[in-house]
Amino acid sequence: MAERQTNGVQSVQRALALLERVAEAQCGARLTDLARDAGLAASTVHRLLTTLEQSGFVHADAASGRWHVGQRAFAVGAAYTKQRSFVAPALPFLRRLRDATRETANLGVIEDGEVVTLSQVESREIMRAISPPGGRVPVMCSGMGKAILATWEDAAIDRAIERHGLRALTKRSLTSPEAVHAEIANIRQRGYALDDEEFVIGLRCVAAVVWGPAGEPACAISVSGLAARMTPEKVIQTGTTVQRLAAELTEVLGGKPPESS
Image (tube, rainbow, N blue to C red; front, top):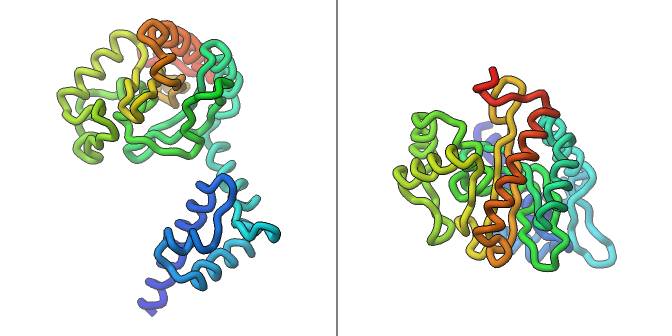
């Protein structure tokens, strides 16, 4: 019995891992590539994919033989954003943010030590920054993560660092509690957060927090773009714009900063 339960859990884990890999393949994924990446036999992968297909989570294109995400997976993912009541109202603000800055606008939340991008409006520039919805980034390597973290008490920030650590993604990432607290102090003073090539070298992100009705940080919105375009002058201008639109979205959501309570 215990053995069957273990195998069952393992099958679920493998199936979900395959679903993630299929989702990451924008043009569809080949069975052989999925088997190689997963370290599984092609027959095992085919059996798991067929099971997912029967439930509508993936489907195979008969012409190319590639596997794609199915409608059911989309429905489940959409349910996640529906539970975040701010996602739909935020979309017009993201469009305004994109149009005002000509860069990609994002909306995200903190979840288990990482920032999850929930919604995005892409820049119309040929060279643009894109971290697709569903993508996850360590909190301290993200402008949105820093913006939300700056609303926390210092003791809560220390607990988060102790639990999740400080993972460096580039040579500019913050790697010590002292550096984090110095950065948080700067964010609190100027009112917006900056990811200065800490997630990806060559990209900068400017973010501000959006408040919920209970005076809690509901989410954050940001602008991300190539560092060559996001000059120090543009960062300051963008910071002002992001703050203003974050405040307007806060008002639409019926939110209020703690000091307004």
